[in-house]
Every structure is written in C-alpha cells, then in structure tokens.
Image 1 (tube, rainbow, N blue to C red):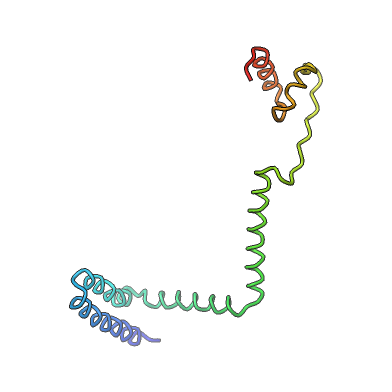
Image 2 (cartoon, rainbow, N blue to C red):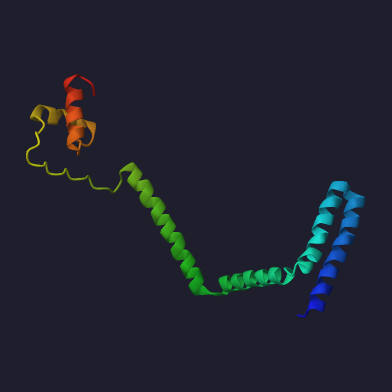
Length: 150
C-alpha cells in the first residue's frame, strides 16, 4: 500500500472514532467522551509517526502465528510435550517434598583420624533425623548432647 492509502485508512478510522466519541459524550457523559477522544486520536497519531504500518505488520504476524497454531499438528504435539514436562516437574517436586519415592542418602565414610561417636550417642541419634556430615557440626552436636541440650 502506498502513503495515500495509509492516510485514507488513518483518516477513516479517525472519522469513525470521532462519530463514536460524539455519541459517547451525548449518551454516557464527559468521562466516556474523553476516553473516546483519546482512542480516536490514536490512528492519526500512528499515521503521522509512521507506526501504522508497524502495527499492521505486528497484527499480521500474530494472525499468521495463530493460523499456524490451529492448523499445525506438529506444533500441537510440541505444546502437549511442553505441558507434560511441566506436569512431571510439578509432580516430582511434590513427591520429593513429601519424601515419596526418594532413597535415603548413604552416610559418608568417616575420614581417618577423626574421633567416632560412642555407640551410646550414635544409638541416641538414630531417631532424630540424619546424622551430622560435617566434622565441626558433629563436635558441636556432641557438646550440646553432653550438656543436655538437643
């Protein structure tokens, strides 16, 4: 389309918007009329700033994408796979937060030269959760247990 066609389109849209604005002022009041005037000025502003063509290209690109979305079975298959992936992530996160389907972690082997916990303290720690992995934390826990703080 040439520049005259774009100008005619902008003028026509502005004229139709002006008629709509006049009816809005008469029937609905000044607030609705001012909103109509704001919308009425948009096509003319888009023409004068040379963005009317850009807006139509964007609209055409969206329409082409929507048409390919509706009529392309491969695209629908991709969307279905995307949804299944999201569901799997959500289900695995819910299962792991509840401890369902997870294997207990194996305790790390103790480094040579570090003191082992006595059997009596190791037995007391079994019902309280996982044992401390870090040597410093094991010492702190042993001191706390020695003083009766748990």
